[in-house]
Image 1 (cartoon, helix red, strand yellow):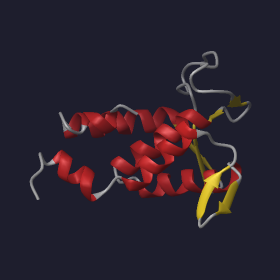
Image 2 (cartoon, helix red, strand yellow; image 1 turned 90 degrees about the vertical axis):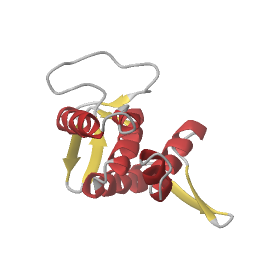
Image 3 (cartoon, rainbow, N blue to C red; image 1 turned 60 degrees about the vertical axis):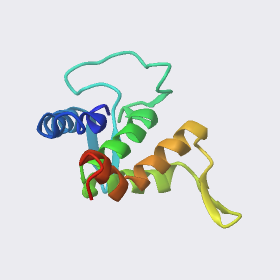
Image 4 (cartoon, rainbow, N blue to C red; image 1 turned 135 degrees about the horizontal axis):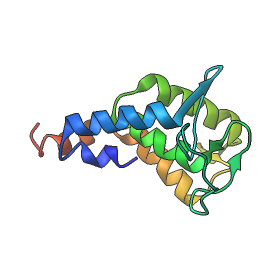
Length: 132
Protein backbone atom coordinates (compact mmCIF):
# COMPACT_ATOMS: atom_id res chain seq x y z
CA UNK A 1 0.00 0.00 0.00
CA UNK A 2 1.35 3.39 -0.96
CA UNK A 3 0.28 4.82 2.39
CA UNK A 4 3.53 3.36 3.74
CA UNK A 5 5.68 5.80 1.71
CA UNK A 6 3.16 8.62 2.25
CA UNK A 7 4.22 8.59 5.91
CA UNK A 8 7.34 10.49 4.84
CA UNK A 9 5.26 13.36 3.46
CA UNK A 10 2.14 13.56 5.65
CA UNK A 11 1.78 11.16 8.58
CA UNK A 12 -1.86 12.06 9.30
CA UNK A 13 -2.95 11.64 5.70
CA UNK A 14 -1.02 8.36 5.49
CA UNK A 15 -2.77 6.99 8.59
CA UNK A 16 -6.14 8.06 7.19
CA UNK A 17 -5.41 6.33 3.87
CA UNK A 18 -4.26 3.17 5.68
CA UNK A 19 -7.43 3.15 7.78
CA UNK A 20 -9.63 3.57 4.71
CA UNK A 21 -7.83 0.89 2.71
CA UNK A 22 -7.88 -1.46 5.69
CA UNK A 23 -11.64 -0.98 6.12
CA UNK A 24 -12.35 -1.70 2.44
CA UNK A 25 -9.84 -4.44 1.63
CA UNK A 26 -8.78 -6.26 4.79
CA UNK A 27 -10.60 -9.24 6.18
CA UNK A 28 -10.17 -11.67 9.06
CA UNK A 29 -11.70 -15.06 9.65
CA UNK A 30 -11.00 -17.22 12.70
CA UNK A 31 -7.62 -15.55 13.32
CA UNK A 32 -6.52 -15.69 9.68
CA UNK A 33 -6.00 -12.36 7.92
CA UNK A 34 -6.14 -11.72 4.20
CA UNK A 35 -6.72 -8.90 1.77
CA UNK A 36 -8.98 -8.65 -1.24
CA UNK A 37 -7.93 -7.18 -4.57
CA UNK A 38 -11.03 -4.99 -4.72
CA UNK A 39 -13.06 -2.98 -2.17
CA UNK A 40 -16.24 -4.53 -0.80
CA UNK A 41 -18.24 -1.95 -2.75
CA UNK A 42 -16.93 -2.97 -6.18
CA UNK A 43 -16.31 -6.18 -8.07
CA UNK A 44 -13.52 -6.13 -10.62
CA UNK A 45 -11.63 -8.59 -12.76
CA UNK A 46 -8.51 -10.41 -11.61
CA UNK A 47 -5.39 -8.34 -12.12
CA UNK A 48 -2.59 -10.14 -13.94
CA UNK A 49 -0.02 -8.36 -11.74
CA UNK A 50 -1.56 -9.65 -8.51
CA UNK A 51 -2.02 -13.23 -9.56
CA UNK A 52 -5.02 -15.44 -9.02
CA UNK A 53 -7.59 -14.87 -6.31
CA UNK A 54 -9.15 -17.55 -4.18
CA UNK A 55 -12.87 -17.46 -5.04
CA UNK A 56 -15.70 -16.93 -2.56
CA UNK A 57 -13.43 -15.34 0.06
CA UNK A 58 -11.74 -13.22 -2.65
CA UNK A 59 -8.29 -13.73 -1.15
CA UNK A 60 -5.46 -12.09 -3.09
CA UNK A 61 -1.93 -13.22 -2.20
CA UNK A 62 -0.41 -10.12 -3.82
CA UNK A 63 -2.70 -7.73 -1.98
CA UNK A 64 -2.16 -9.62 1.27
CA UNK A 65 1.60 -9.25 0.87
CA UNK A 66 1.29 -5.49 0.36
CA UNK A 67 -0.96 -5.36 3.42
CA UNK A 68 1.83 -6.97 5.45
CA UNK A 69 4.04 -3.99 4.64
CA UNK A 70 1.30 -1.50 5.49
CA UNK A 71 0.29 -3.26 8.72
CA UNK A 72 3.93 -3.31 9.80
CA UNK A 73 4.50 0.35 8.88
CA UNK A 74 1.42 1.48 10.81
CA UNK A 75 2.03 -0.77 13.83
CA UNK A 76 -1.15 -2.74 13.22
CA UNK A 77 0.21 -5.73 15.11
CA UNK A 78 -3.12 -7.54 15.30
CA UNK A 79 -3.70 -7.57 11.54
CA UNK A 80 -0.02 -8.29 10.81
CA UNK A 81 -0.20 -11.29 13.13
CA UNK A 82 -3.33 -12.54 11.34
CA UNK A 83 -1.63 -12.13 7.96
CA UNK A 84 1.44 -14.02 9.21
CA UNK A 85 -0.82 -16.79 10.54
CA UNK A 86 -2.32 -17.16 7.07
CA UNK A 87 1.12 -17.12 5.48
CA UNK A 88 2.40 -19.81 7.84
CA UNK A 89 -0.66 -21.94 7.13
CA UNK A 90 -1.23 -21.49 3.40
CA UNK A 91 2.17 -20.74 1.84
CA UNK A 92 3.71 -24.10 2.75
CA UNK A 93 6.63 -23.04 4.96
CA UNK A 94 9.71 -25.20 4.75
CA UNK A 95 12.75 -25.08 7.01
CA UNK A 96 15.98 -25.75 5.20
CA UNK A 97 19.64 -24.82 5.62
CA UNK A 98 18.90 -23.03 8.88
CA UNK A 99 16.30 -20.78 7.27
CA UNK A 100 12.64 -20.66 6.36
CA UNK A 101 11.16 -20.36 2.91
CA UNK A 102 7.63 -20.48 1.59
CA UNK A 103 7.11 -23.03 -1.17
CA UNK A 104 4.06 -21.18 -2.53
CA UNK A 105 6.03 -17.94 -2.89
CA UNK A 106 8.52 -16.56 -5.38
CA UNK A 107 11.38 -14.06 -5.23
CA UNK A 108 9.09 -11.03 -5.21
CA UNK A 109 6.81 -12.52 -2.57
CA UNK A 110 9.84 -13.39 -0.46
CA UNK A 111 11.12 -9.80 -0.74
CA UNK A 112 7.74 -8.41 0.34
CA UNK A 113 7.59 -10.71 3.36
CA UNK A 114 11.16 -9.82 4.32
CA UNK A 115 10.56 -6.09 3.99
CA UNK A 116 7.42 -6.28 6.12
CA UNK A 117 9.35 -8.05 8.87
CA UNK A 118 12.33 -5.66 8.98
CA UNK A 119 10.42 -2.38 9.18
CA UNK A 120 11.18 -0.89 12.54
CA UNK A 121 13.90 1.33 14.01
CA UNK A 122 15.50 2.11 10.65
CA UNK A 123 12.15 3.13 9.12
CA UNK A 124 11.42 5.30 12.15
CA UNK A 125 14.77 7.02 11.62
CA UNK A 126 13.99 7.62 7.93
CA UNK A 127 10.59 9.09 8.89
CA UNK A 128 12.22 11.44 11.36
CA UNK A 129 14.61 12.77 8.71
CA UNK A 130 17.58 10.82 10.05
CA UNK A 131 17.36 12.29 13.56
CA UNK A 132 17.92 9.78 16.38
